[in-house]
Image 1 (tube, rainbow over the protein chains, first blue to last red):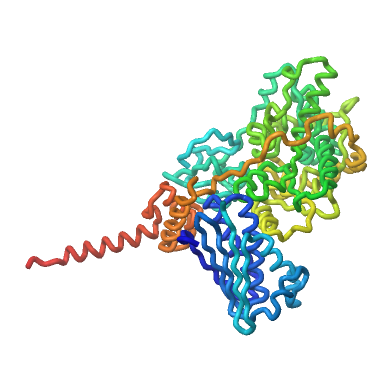
Image 2: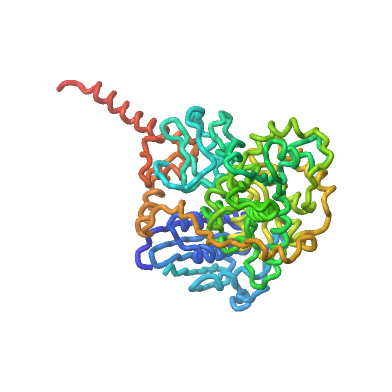
Length: 142
Length: 435
């Protein structure tokens, strides 16, 4: 990103289902105010909600960062653990390590990461067991 | 606010009645109301004519502009299109016929049930749902306030809106055509009037959605003609007008009526504009991608809850449930002949465009600068969302400052802080001794 015009951070707590979705709602509102087109909006909506839910369901807590400039939207999710043991496994559709609690709420279909990858123009995931996970997604505006 | 546009709105403000309170501010789903100079202002671009402000205003300063009953005299022949919710307004009736006959008694030459239009639309949507590759869920186009909400707040969901006209439009086309054939008169001699439960439908006639031109000539408020119909309701006629719609079409009047008619197995019906917003948010996030059909109604209870209904929505819904039992129970999929799907215009002939009213600026760089300023201003605001400044929340107030409609000193709390600083300075000055 050249020069970040809009920057916002959203802390997301582990297991906080009551606030889940608030970050992605705010992200969508901002993009709408900036006049981001419908196609990008829809993809950011899906990806930001999935990544926010991932932080709630799987992580020990973390934050979501939004950066927007005239070239595009950058969404970064960083958490403090526990990290993913096998990323290629986690990227598979239908694979999930979600808890019973999360499943009882209708989550854990194993589509989170594949959905993010499908909707972002660029997708990168880095993870280290015991350390944490960093997911970076770019959406081009042009 | 100070913007002027040519948008038509049925929902208007009666300035003489407005006290400048903040009740309506908080209930507007598109943040379209501001209080400035002691009076409410409706931002044209954002208003979706849902009527929430009409319901909430205890001073009756928000009104719905509809046509007067006398408008029917502008045509040699007038046809009434009663919304099925009208049937629920009269407690003492045992069948739909007295309602249809009362409309004739107050001046309409012919009556055509909107529920018949709903039957045809039900079958058309049912057929549509069989097409492969449709977005999921498909969203009903029947409630104009919901469609306008999508244009303003969820423009990325526009492709999900089903491209089939509202039942009132379909009913109007058929009513006019059948009348002209029967009486051998030119279409311009026939006025078709919708008996409306809400301002959103009135607006949809003047500025149609998905259609170049509406087939309807005017809309008359149910509230206005309720009293005029009342004296005729009890009369027993030798040949009462028989309803010809199905139970499914009539039950479109209440929430879930449409969903039950088009896709009972995998649909969701939500009523109340705030509830609809919440679920649209979930659809936008792809959380309901297994769902086939979504019916959203701006009013609680569906059209029976429209602000122009006389009876409360629960009583009306119950009345309609009972009255509709006498109607044909045949599903519209079987009751409506396939030929009806091609005989009259059923599909959209105009695109639904996104409404960019929420955009801070047409130029994205400028919009980003404004947003950065907005966020800086917001940090300095108290966050009470008290509405005293005339904007619904501190966030919208910050937005209004950036848009140039007000200044930070319009915030009473900021002003108090400023006064305190000034007062302290004055004390300091007063205490200054001559050296």
